[in-house]
Image 1 (cartoon, rainbow, N blue to C red):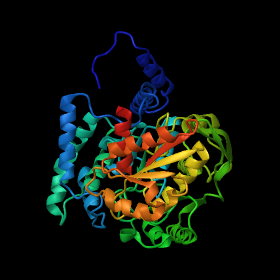
Image 2 (cartoon, helix red, strand yellow):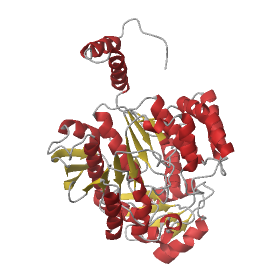
Image 3 (cartoon, rainbow, N blue to C red):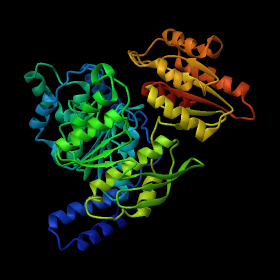
Image 4 (tube, one colour):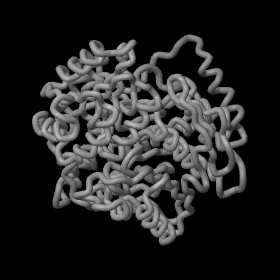
Length: 503
């Protein structure tokens, strides 16, 4: 932050006024609160593209790259040793930063990041300083750690890494396995939140729940988005088994906000809630979506919270699943503020409207180009693909839709392709740059079985695949009604986003 002070600045008058208003409180606390509030006023809502570009300063870009390279030498996010012992040891030597603020913990199979972003927007709108930790990132690693609704500055990201690095190395030396990439990032997030400081943290699990590195927080609100089959080799082969693992984030006496679930998953989670004496709010019972209409640029909602109804909510995101995510997010914030436990009351409706109207969710039903329309969505499992297919059909009404699909090894690609088969006229299969990417030819073999030879085109390079799909849409568009959907993984969407926004 610059040390240069303007000769005359209304912000300092505002600061003095807020301190005066808080004069009946402890003077030090009044100054801290005034500083927090004026910082929020100066920052305002995030502007422009919510996904940060690479730093323009060459020195900062070099420093960030060096940190990324150091982190890349650690276990990746797909190699796990199911234990929280290492992250707990790191928190211990750092002085337990994760206990410096209340938190909302979010798990589930699909919808976690979008729900976390909505929770964050609501808390920001009610003038709380927030920290949000989500994964994976779309384009920049700094997206994973957000402060006050915006990705952490690259400089601050680098500083945080080097601040905790000596302690990371201390834990590395004492443990059987070094801290993983995700564990170090989790430690960085918790440290950055404490240093800010934030009033509340919104934390998305990386995978599962019980032994996920994020699960060293003692969240007063646990949120579980819809559970379906994914990571079955690590979490279980049925929704009920997966729910047992994800239910590990429900802490003693917490409030559980439960999205609509398969029956066996709901049973497992409700049983866990009883065991830890958690209060439960269920979508469709204590809260939910009352009404929704497709609108230009998104949808218009009426939501029922735990204290009452909220009408006239504009959500600039597409699809019924996003409406349900909004209901879950609203209930989570109500629970955070104690609504539902103190009788019937609601949050300020106008503030809720402003919050939802500001929500973005990069790479999730995101329009990045027009003529033809190109939509990005990170669906990577059959359940996610099914809701995306439904949302595209409802929200856009394309006369012809071309798919671009690149997936990761180990995913149920047949299930994903089968979900998209009814809406794709043709599909261009490709691969992204990840070392875990499924080869284009391997993916094409499955696609041919699902779509037939005539509807499948293979382009090993993603840029060529995008160009081929856009050309197909332009050439065969019926009165401009054709579109392109890029999907299959977060990595695919992130790389496509970079390519398309540069073009």
